Image 1 (cartoon, rainbow, N blue to C red):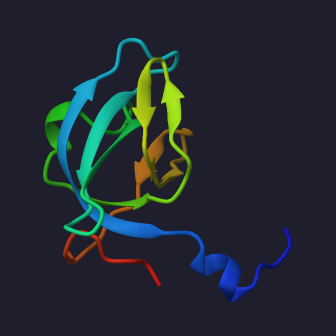
Image 2 (image 1 turned 60 degrees about the vertical axis):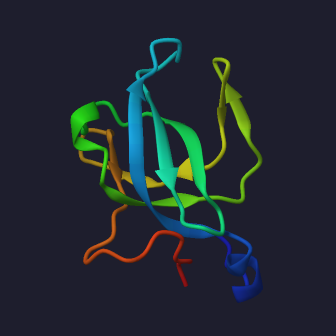
Length: 112
């Protein structure tokens, strides 16, 4: 793995946000949810497809504070525009465990 400069890191726009809505996504090839996150006044609500079905029930997601990369190009996933990347780590079984914030911070805070 090679090092990057701090200026390179500054280009990655990781922001805090609150999940406002989540739905099943049966058209996705791999099990996934459609997730909408409020990133505050500057960015607003963005949507994404997230393969987080193994560790999270749909009813557990609304209200959860998460971290998303909001400056990636949009990607069409099975007819649904994914506007950001919800970030997480693989657990011991390879399922995604979301990056969250504790204690909570306002929506839209930039990770630094």
